[in-house]
Image (cartoon, rainbow, N blue to C red; front, side, top):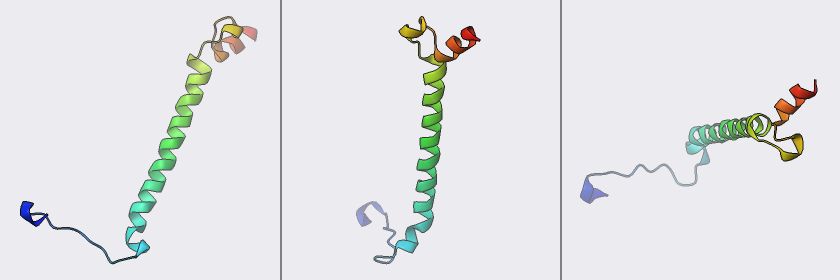
Length: 67
């Protein structure tokens, strides 16, 4: 590190509170990413995925046709 002019940033040993803000950010990020992925999959499942047993229609198209 010193050879390249870099210095290490070290917090105190075994202090979980030092990382609390970072851990909070990643927890929030993972939750939001997971929610977005689930929303995208539900949209795909209902609007883009064609089903042979539904006469090659998506579930939404089939529901609209039946109504």
